[in-house]
Image (cartoon, rainbow, N blue to C red):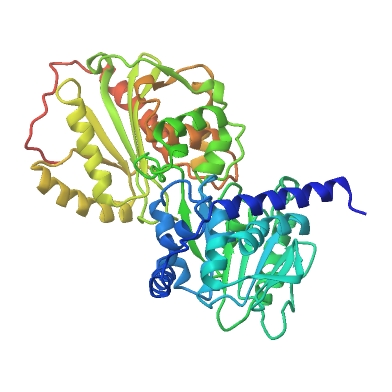
Length: 508
């Protein structure tokens, strides 16, 4: 006898089938020739395929990263794909519905496995496929009836052409899975981790072991795809552990809710308009950073959110001495490298005002061009001391690019190279704690919405001994404060004879 919970599951599935059936009308007057031509075109165009067969799911135009699924994923079998898309960017829909069926109707799918936290969850994630194979009029019209009576249960079913779909929990082993001669060749890892296990690295590593030692060996060795559809929300999440294992080859597609310019990565979707993202950011706090910006961190204990306060900036000429614009560069320009980070501060008495902050994983040219932008922004109202944390290698790498940018701009940026022997980075950054606690470091209120200022705040809050989050902007801030203290000490004992006037023709 069915339990009430089972009856509800069946009812929900039947309602889903009805919705899909009603949303996929067919053209009864289409000729056989037109039908053949249409199907042929759809099977070579992933975006068109999804829009035609799944109109109920495609409620917004594809984003740039979704349009690249065919080129960057489908055409590259025998790879592990870490699809680190922001929460809400339809990871499960693409990798748990669209893509498996696109492969199936192209005769590329021999079987599909979903691995999740438990068998019930895995079976639930297969329900959209089962409902579409059973009730999607367009699929049935173009490819024939799919439902195989007698083998059509939640979590384990097969189609009439003997393609099977399996749901496994991580307490089960999918090794040896096959239907007749067919071993599955596509697997999806979705919602594998739970909060308790993520706090324990040994347990988290067991999840990784399950993926690599139980799930992956179940796939057909000749041609296969393994997808991990998980944003990078925790240091112990399976996608993070796989990405950081140098012995495992993976392809990473990381898509934050915002791009490097601070704009929406799915602007075509009203749910992720600039206004909508602002609301999410204001209401989700640290979860926004973790789940939507692929930044795994636990809020640290060094800097507290209530200490990070804003103020209206002074007119630039009213700051003591000069403005300090400090750079923490990185060696490389890749997604895995550190940020190139600039922080501009002005000092007034005992207070340090963070006027601007910038951080990007970019090349040296963009880094130096930003410094020139600051030069122009300040103008003749105040003098800027540009300084770069440097050792011999950094100076050698970045100074050559500065020369090239200087030729374009028509003058050389006056940038000092900070060669001092620095103490441990964490210890240096930690020395700012009493300044924040006393309210002596204040952020420019006018820059509150800027990406660089947000990034500085995020990195400060995550600072903790042993944390793996980037700390380049806090490091640049510490360098700027150190430089402001020493420069203004010298200035306070000297006789001022007049204000320095900047010229367009300069040299270091």
